[in-house]
Image: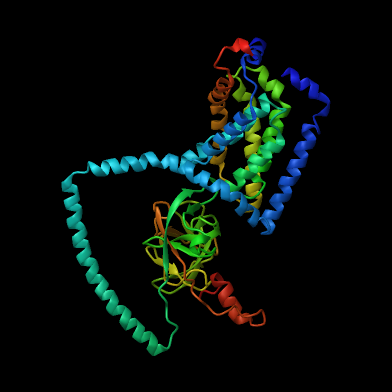
Length: 172
Length: 307
């Protein structure tokens, strides 16, 4: 495990700000696809996952402030209450930053079990706010946290691959 | 982590805990303000300006292949189908024009009768066609966005219909978009009248796409399965006489004071893509002040005023 971690260190390009912003943007766009019905319930929270990826892999570049900003954007787009997504994403980023060393210790295949509680917590915060304001809750909403945890593996492998240099790695 | 990061070790700013508490407090504050007051709507509009084209792009990317496929299958559709359809449409047209004639006769008759009774004239409502751009991605809510906004003089509170009945109400207006809350949104209320008996009631959304509930109706109330509910126009928001729902199920359990009445919306609330925004609101006299309690009860609380 440690070996792989150090391998990553050697072969990864430094994450440029452009790349981080673009990946965040792509996550939001994926969230904004017209999901409906059961698919909406099963939709992984792509923006939240990308945030969590950066919070666990580059905790000093992407932090709670950026998570909060992304949350505000998501709030406007979903016409939810101001701060609803923001609070749940801040919590997600906070958890990611607190546990980033622990999560990186695990192989990517074992990471979903580690991040699932974080996702569940942030989903629960979102649902709790909704419940406080509107007095109703639909339980299938929490399916999203499960599918998010499942899609973590392909997503983080994809991001990791895109950070790898295509030219000669020895130049780094 | 990176070797450069260890140099920054001492000037990294507040700890994650402090940052989290800071942003959580801001979020909670915003939540409170947004839930209680309307001060943040302008900020929402400003932020929505760059976001909404992106949202439309995202939903466009997803629906575009389907639209192309429709075009393609339209080209290869056999001529026979088209001829059949044409015949059917012609027949329908004949039937419809007959009905239209009847309607015109009835309208003239109605106008004359109304003049006789010196009643306020029902006006024709100017309609605005709008197309659903995307549906709400929040699983808790029943909302859609259509492509006409304040640039086309859409105002919050206007009623949205399809050709068979009421679909919902405009609740928020952006420059090029407006948000429509469907009548099936949880606890969304529409004042209605039973078409058969004239009984006034309020129909509530259940959060489920195909159900509405007629609440606070006594067990003895005269409602039957198959009754059609139309808007009563009492609230001044919905014009009177628009079909809303049909009663599908009634449970009269003596253990409860009210009957359990389930209705189905008449409009294809979740099926249409083209909707009509009714832009002329029905004018009713101003609500009398609190000193006139009799009129007040009748207008403000239609659900309690059933006989």
